[in-house]
Image (cartoon, rainbow, N blue to C red):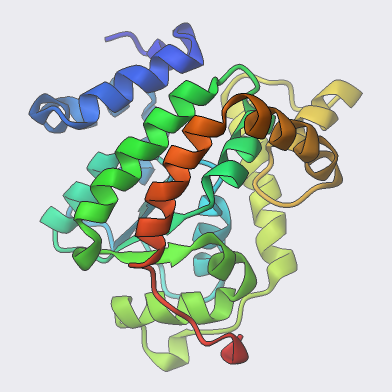
Length: 263
C-alpha cells in the first residue's frame, strides 16, 4: 500500500472506497496498517486501548471545535481518538469499552460546508458517506453519546460537562472554556495541517482565501459562499438531501437533550 495513497486518488474515489470497506470485516483487520502506511501523521488520532474516548462525526460537523474545546476545558491530559471520520473508530471504541461521542449535523449544512472546503466532492459521494456512517450509528445509538451540532456550538459548556461526566473528570479538574483560545487552536491546527500536506508556510492572497473556506470555524468567506451552494443542492440534488434528512431526523430522536436555560 503506497504511503501517499490518499493524495494519489481522486477525492470521490477515495471516499467511495472507504465507505465500501466500512461494512467489511477485512477493514478492521487492516485499518491500523492502512493508516500507518498511507497517513502516518494521523496515528495519534487512531483509537486503541490507551484512548480515553472517541469523538467522531461526518466531516464539517464541529469535530475540530469540540476536540479543542474539550482540551481547553481541563488540565487533565486526554488521549482523544478523533477526526478520522471512519465507522471503525466508533465500533472499536465500543469494543474497548470507551466513551464514544458522535455529533450529527443537518445534512444540507454539512454538505454545503464540506463542498466549500472540497469543491471537487460530489453530492452522491457525500450522501453515501452520510447514510452509511449515521445508518450504522443509529444501530449503535444505545451505546453512544449522540450530540446535535447546534448544541456543540451553542452550548459547549453544557456539552463538555456531559462528556466530563462520562470520563469521570473531577469537578476541580474542569473549567469553563475560552472560545477565543479554542478558535486560535483551531486556526493553528488548520495551518499545521496545510504544512503537513506540503503547502507553503507563507500564505498568498489565494492561500488566505482557501484557508478562510477550509478552517473549522465561522468565517466571512464561508458565509458569502453558502447561499450559492445551498441553492445548488436544493435545486439539483433534492432527492439526496431529502433522503439524508430522513436519517438525520431519526438520529436526532436519539440525541441528548440539553436545557437551554443552563447554557
